[in-house]
Length: 393
Image (cartoon, rainbow, N blue to C red; front, side, top):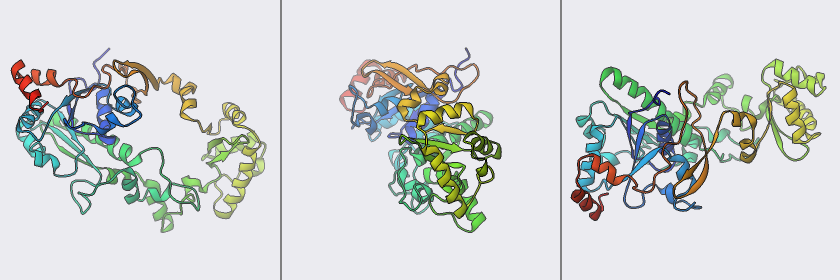
């Protein structure tokens, strides 16, 4: 088996909570050596968020496998020296502080680049490094609101809803961060020069709101919530309730799928109405809703096996775990954490040739690798003891 794609890439991870740790999780799962640097006054808040297993929260365990942990006081001159020594030999640094924080600590891009011109320094923030909002606090719900996305999430004639999926954090922060880091790493290998990667979660969320831009340019304005092409306006692309109070998703956008559905439910009169719009769409939706309401979820799950029409049951996570497709793809993995015991997590989702995803390190204990890291920098036992006594590590 070949080495993992990012084998040998050293990443210093200054992030906490969700966007940055998910970004560096992907890097770690692809083989990078990710060193999670946690302050000595509690570290990553997610570590302690209840309910805990034995010492750590399930969320922390899921976001920080395949990483090491260094407890380090960056406000201390000795702590800053340790960080810069590590940065000399690193390929990537990821931070999630507000703009200006790493500069005040003396570990910003300019300081590191002076020591290591090849460094890729990625900053993940809510609003970016410039603009009038650069210093504002925020979370996912704020970034999605500013980007115009929250206005579109929710039922027709209802209020916006908060989805249990952090779109701005994960799409706008984590995945955009990985994309920027990998592009800059490739360039650094070719040019010998790293880059500063400025990831604003609001920007990256907005840039993917293509449906909103399409609606505005087509109709002069975005459609009301729940009325756009793919947000509930079409009969062929919607959620429908079943007889037993569950739901199915129908995504029969193409004629061939809609026709197959209509044939399967013996409603040929609806065959030319899948893309109905406005008042006609409401009438068609009512008829389709009545069809789905006539049978329970299991019936429609069996129907979807027989009729190729982009119909799927809306599963709970517990049901998704038993789904044969997700099982075949190995998307749920179990492993034993030395302190927190057996735990189930999602696997790394991207499949490569000559690559087998593995959990080579369980999520680290708080500062678990501090001594080995500073020892690797050449500090002797007495110096390490002094650093610990002074609270630097």
